[in-house]
Image 1 (cartoon, helix red, strand yellow):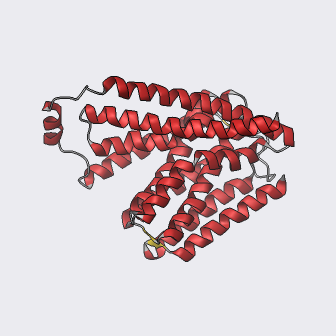
Image 2 (spheres, one colour):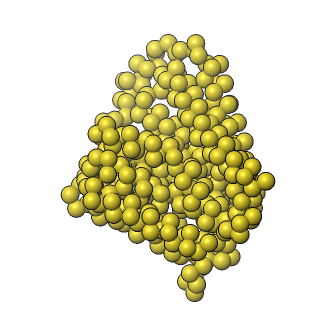
Length: 328
């Protein structure tokens, strides 16, 4: 039975990742057929698509009463992103970071992490946050922060001349819309959503069973297996982008994903079902803050992350994983 559930975990991850890819591709094709500008597709559909695995897994976890999987998924994914993904990408090729990213975008991710830290505990009497809760009102605060991030992102894109002008939008509107693949795109959107929902259910049920079977805390499962599985799209995207010399995409992918994970995913999940924390510790939250701080410091010094600094980030990931498995 245990091996069968381990198989279900693998199948669940595969379905979630494939479903997210199909949903994103179908939605992007549909938007292009409707003559929606590429920049808007990138800022919305593609960005949300890479965070869809975390979103669905966290929501399903919360609805099934396994809040530690949901919170651990987000915290673990962000640590995974900041240490392993940025670290591996920098080891492949040193990552040049734009000044605007260092001065505006990364600080937004740091603030989001600090906000989560504040909302996760009522006091600091213990390393454990046992019984504390991310309430619906906390979820609303996170969603307001996400709305602010999106407004800021679109404003910055418009200021930098990346957004289409009114004339271009009018020209776009006058062009005939392509409905030739409408049914195909809708089909893939529906299939993608179905795989996300079914795969998330399968994954959460199997991970919960394995945690109970071996006496492992759900938070540890969330911080490791769940986080690693749902972060695979960001890992693949960033490493390939770094290899091709497109480090801006790699670092932007990580920052955007971190902000989406905390503000949108935890915010939406908490609004649907308040998240009672039972196994996440202040150590986990401190690792989240310290690692994003390291990435900011490395990027700020010379506006790039070197191979040596990438190795430091990967080392932080290995030490943290060692700490988690030591606690089992």
